[in-house]
Length: 469
Ligand SMILES: Cc1cc2nc3c(=O)[nH]c(=O)nc-3n(C[C@H](O)[C@H](O)[C@H](O)COP(=O)(O)OP(=O)(O)OC[C@H]3O[C@@H](n4cnc5c(N)ncnc54)[C@H](O)[C@@H]3O)c2cc1C
Ligand SMILES: NC(=O)c1ccc[n+]([C@@H]2O[C@H](COP(=O)([O-])OP(=O)(O)OC[C@H]3O[C@@H](n4cnc5c(N)ncnc54)[C@H](O)[C@@H]3O)[C@@H](O)[C@H]2O)c1
Image 1 (spheres, rainbow, N blue to C red):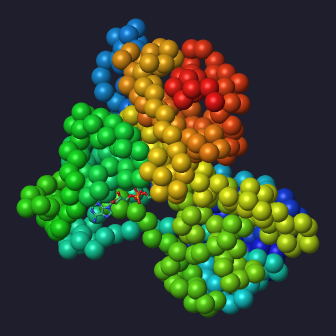
Image 2: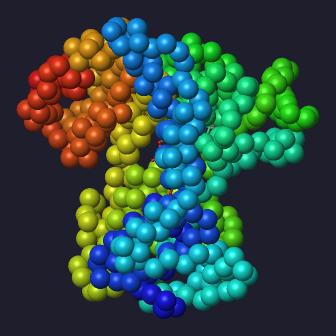
Image 3: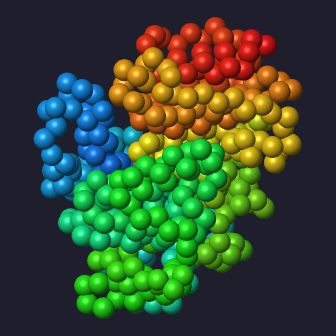
């Protein structure tokens, strides 16, 4: 293996893999450096295992809502089978399949901890303590992801709390689980663990899913409470562990649990990457332009969680495609298209980020919420429709409950954002993303006919509710 590559990439998560792939397809050589598992957080401790923990409960409840199938449901989820499926989905935390893909794609892989060591220079410390220097001819890419944020609560660290890693890789569910945080991780893990019969208490100081439309937040909160989850709008003030039990103090009350999950956000994995050797601040998020070039550099890029643009795998991979392509274009002297929505920029990060929270009901949203659109100065009209009134939804489940909202830019008559809440709405999101990114005028959307009887007919109802422009 050479010590000089066109592109040297710190990390080999899903995002880094895509940078390398695009760079190689653009005619460059690339090496990934990984200290843990190739595939990163998403494959082994985040997106994939968390959804595996949720899916069985969702499938069971979907069956219970359809007479004819409901009668065949004779119990709750088989927890051992759910956990076994989760373990299969993460390949028992073995990355050999991903390593095979890396080699098949013509990418080199070095195992070890990578640190920047000057301009276009990276030093790798391998597991036996030896060091190896790698030099980049064109670009170095930081794709080291993020770590869980542990808030400064007295007693928290001593109580050995779970981070999302322990929650998604647990071999046995606890009888009682307390969760600090009200974001996506907290909501999804409360959904999963309550389906296992665990008694769940959530401490969410700003309520659940801040940043989402209020109707979505309320629907998820009500449904979790209905399924027995204790949701408290409070921040813990003190935590203590004694033996097998952990006590969380808040508002003069104490909640006792067997495990405590901290899901209060993320910090950048940049404290030990040699950031100081190139003038960056260790432990800080890395500020990039729309081509993922770190501001102030012409050879250093940052993609994925570490640049703090949108902490989602799909957005990170989108940034990676832009970065891999632009690195190749710059290296080969080809034309760079960095105008908005060009081939070499991640414009969608600003106003068209899709996200699905796999709760019950599921929340699928893209673009601006009504609040965000107003704050951004748009003249908007908000169009709401009850998903339960759509014929396709009434077939999907008896007494289907759900809601759809479309936020319209009145000046240009285009969709700025969409939120769906309900069972099985995740797969409906891509149409909304296309409408938002494509800035499809409403009068043209009328010609995008949804098939009958599917839940996508909500598009027709939203357009009718808006009125033909
Ligand atoms: C519980 C949970 C569920 C989630 N679910 C979803 C979801 O459903 N959908 C979604 O889109 N997003 C989800 N996310 C977010 C998603 O996991 C992240 O956005 C994504 O993993 C970021 O990818 P990345 O490649 O930037 O970082 P990572 O996946 O963290 O990859 C970084 C890699 O770099 C390696 N590394 C770090 N430092 C070094 C170093 N110095 N030297 C060598 N290697 C290094 C790490 O070992 C790691 O493999 C979830 C997050 C959590 C916590
Ligand atoms: N399905 C998905 O797309 C998915 C799933 C999981 C995670 N993710 C991503 O992973 C990232 C991390 O998720 P997350 O849920 O950890 O972070 P988050 O930033 O989404 O939510 C953190 C929450 O914790 C609350 N909080 C912070 N400190 C607190 C305290 N001391 N006491 C009580 N509450 C406190 C905040 O108010 C906030 O609601 C997010 O960016 C998310 O988008 C995505």
